[in-house]
Amino acid sequence: MSITASGIYGVRYIHSHIILDKITQDVDKETFVNFQYLILWNDIFRFLMSFILFFATIKFTRLLRFNRRIRLLSMTLSYAAKPVVLFSVMFSIYFLGFLFLANLWFEQTVYAYSNIPLAAGEMFSMLLNRFDFTQLQEADKLLGPLFFSAFTGVCTIALLNMFIVILDESIKRARAELERTKNEFEVVDYMKKQLVGYIHSVMPVFLERSKTEEEEDELVYIPHPEQILEKRIDQLTLHVSNIELEFYEDENKNVDVDDLEAELDDVEMDDVMLDLMSIKSY
Image (cartoon, rainbow, N blue to C red):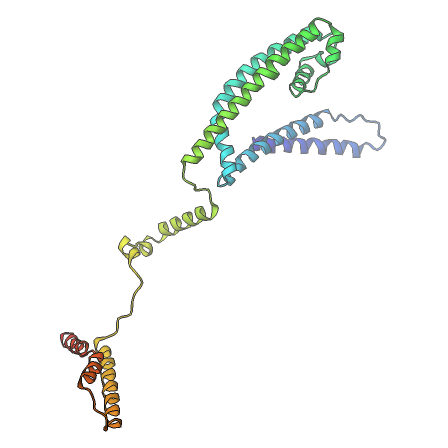
């Protein structure tokens, strides 16, 4: 369709330049210039552009499929596609029947029904509740109200309500489907997932990690056994020097042997021996 529109634009461009050349060459303004073909090609180009913009807008909604409302709209249209097509066939049959009937009854009396295109436009206006009942009544006091009542009851009330029911059922199915599916409509999460997948496809060697590596805790620094022994010896030396200092300061006092043993126990001699054994095994 886009290629066809481009071709029609070229034809319109050529016709416009031909007409402009005729106008500029006619100095006396005596030559008749026919704009009929230019207007025809211009109307065709506008109609094609309107169709292209319509379908491009519908296709553009695919870019917004991450939004839940746009996703609901697209799913509703997909579910309602087949029922709407079948409904359109039935609606066309009824509408064409009333269209030909109105043209036969009111062709001579009402200008809006004098030909098929005008009658179709007038009847579509009646579907939108824009009608002139008085002109039908004045045209024929029996057939006018009869046609208006039949068309309003069949097409406006019955068929349009069927169309609304089809859309309502499609919306319900789309909402139920959205509730069952996983929420993957956040753009940030989607872009992150796609980026990681692309990098993994380009550099798979650098991104291969086992589950055990992912579950491992952070590395903890473990000091060397010799460093532990030096620390324990420094603590032992400090405690012994403190005991000697207290002993010489309190010579006149009776020193309790149990208290000295308790202080030496605080030094954790067993830990010192274990450190020596670990160094030997290391």
